[in-house]
Length: 382
Ligand SMILES: *Cc1c(COP(=O)(O)O)cnc(C)c1O
Image 1: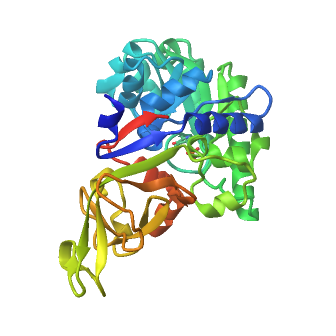
Image 2 (image 1 turned 180 degrees about the vertical axis):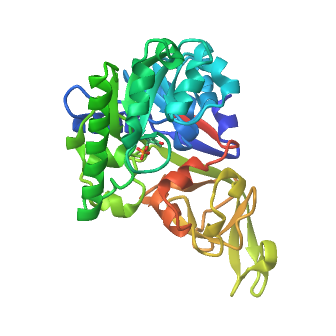
């Protein structure tokens, strides 16, 4: 697609320099011998899994993780190299994809190890240990079941599953408050005890990994062979609150932009948009912007809760955000006209709207705002 076509309606620009700077900053925090295994699930948190993974490959990244087997397949079909770990559940109907596309599968508990092992074909796996989050993973106190399975030479799991790694996921690592710290250390202790137990039964655990973005920033001393960093790689943390405790100069990677379709007058007393929830108090100028909630712009930005930037100036969103369009008050932006670029996330002149701003306006976290950015947005690297 030509540049003009890509920027015709609404699009996402990926800043290559900022992505590589974030990789460098995070690599600087890694314990010795530890590598980044970036999380590119959910379309790389809305950034575009294929362009981001290709860029990461170019930066020398050799391991990636995704949520589902089909996300892994998408990357392989686009020529992405290295190990791709599927963090989530894969239904047995999709087991053939694991081999065909050389994906590593998470063993979500001991029964799943039996199921995947009895599929009868070799598979690369990472064993997941549940150390307290109570989501995926075999409970750490039941690790004996895994020991039996993986050390019994006649079990299907032992014969067919090649253990490339063992991991857990932390659930209270976003701060170092006494309670969070105590729980995080408990999780780390449970994990390393499980690993020791497996290894004492002759099961080789492969690479060990526990940390994601917050873990790396708040608990680097917990260590491991990989860090499964997601959100921080994209230059933000989940909330501004978390950012305040972090001294890293992370740089937002993504901008969302859309074309102004038209600028029109609104006379005093006239309403605008669905339900006419906005009424002009005086003569006003309204820009119709070609992006809406189907593109992932939160509907909660309606009625003045959000803004867009046009020619370096802020224009409050008025009325309700529609599926494909939204309205912004550009009365104060003299030169606003059809064809201008409205910035939804990113910089325009001296002004900036961040993923934090959108997250706060929609009572959410940046992860949700970014990962919900829609398929209709064209993504390209600049
Ligand atoms: C999403 C996810 C990550 C990445 O988390 P961030 O907080 O975005 O760094 C790491 N590990 C697992 C298991 C995940 O589900």
